[in-house]
Length: 131
Image (cartoon, rainbow, N blue to C red; front, side, top):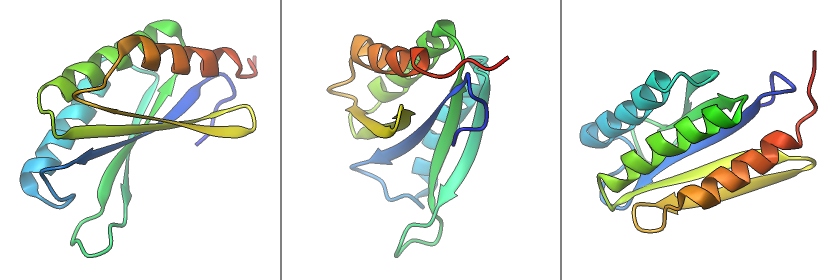
């Protein structure tokens, strides 16, 4: 993470309490999240596969790049909608804020637009703005 100084890169790690990472039904749900984020016209959406011990396929993660408050709002709306479709869905959002790594975990029962937006906007505002 961290390719452009004025973009906030967020690692998005989807998980489910009902599905294993290599379940075809789960992989389809993660693809739907990725497409939703891509359709939201964020600065960048990349796929990353993290090895998952004991499973044929790794757990799919996404890296999203956010450069404006509008991109943060769009990402939060997609995330909220995706989580609300299935209460077993969970997301861990990880980003750097200064010298520390910040993680926010949300699921279909605890997702709060204002908490996610506030955390991401705060981190974006602290980024050095390159020219």
